[in-house]
Length: 159
Image 1 (spheres, rainbow, N blue to C red):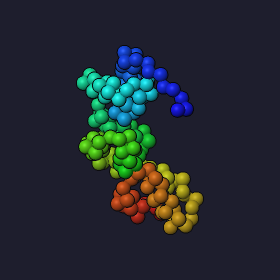
Image 2 (cartoon, rainbow, N blue to C red):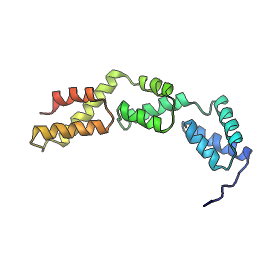
Image 3 (tube, helix red, strand yellow):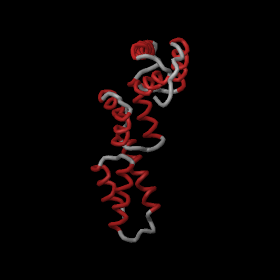
Image 4 (cartoon, one colour):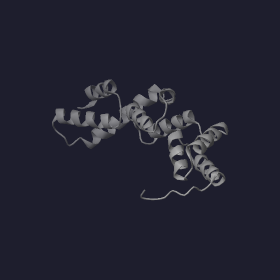
């Protein structure tokens, strides 16, 4: 074993993990990894997780909604990219679906239009319309937007 994980004890671990969860929304997987990092045993970790859930320090649905809101508003990610990131964090399909539903459709399409317009400004020196459309399309796909929405924007915008 490359390094020895020292068990810091249940009381100290509980105090630290409550602070960790209170600081910002956390997901179950992230908290579980942190608890194992404290050198706790499986039964201790499971007990502590259920205690954190009971005391409302940990709420997967609340985490998912906060995550979706932040990634959409601040990073302007599309639903595909957000869903993928939540799956990587081992969030349940139910919570992912519920959190993504919290994004207003009008805001979503307006954000997509805004970032497409911004990208088109960056591409204004590109003279070949096909290359310009392809670059815009690739950019919007990389931001995680749905192909049908991207097609509407690209076919209506790239002139």
